[in-house]
Picture 1: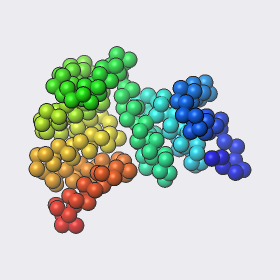
Picture 2: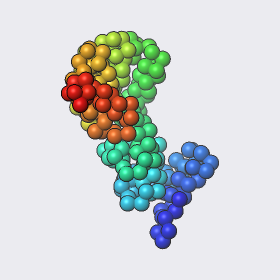
Picture 3: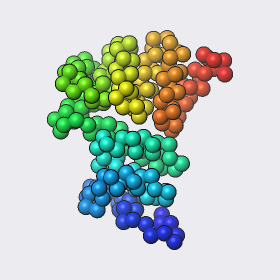
Length: 220
């Protein structure tokens, strides 16, 4: 994976080893010992593809919410692997916000929604929103819960607030599109899906929705 004639940072060697042995703990430990978050952010926009891949992977494992914009830009990278790593990593970054206790509560919300315990998730999310309304991911988790309870208007409101706080949150834009579809509002759904695709061009299912709804709404 090395680039001929260029001395690559040791980060690329860590990345190559990770690809070989899939030892995430070792990769994380090596990166922590040699790199700061700020340096990883700079390397995530390096002209060499392999360096970007390694840096984006590292930020996905280790980055806090301060790397959100860097990861959001990586969603538009020319390299498909960088885009994939950014999409996987940024979702984790979104949950690394707030105090350690608040991050634990966000993790609880995620598990509750995954278990389809939507009412409990919505209740807990509302409590956390009252405490820390600036945490975008809490609004997103409540949106998921409200969607699960068929409160589509409420889900849209929470998705809007999520995007107000985190303009890179393509998942909220996607969720808003699905909620508008449930409310039989294809025009607003199309706008939401287009917004999601603008944030993350790799969302192929969303792209299909945009094509379908464009034909329906605009006759294209």
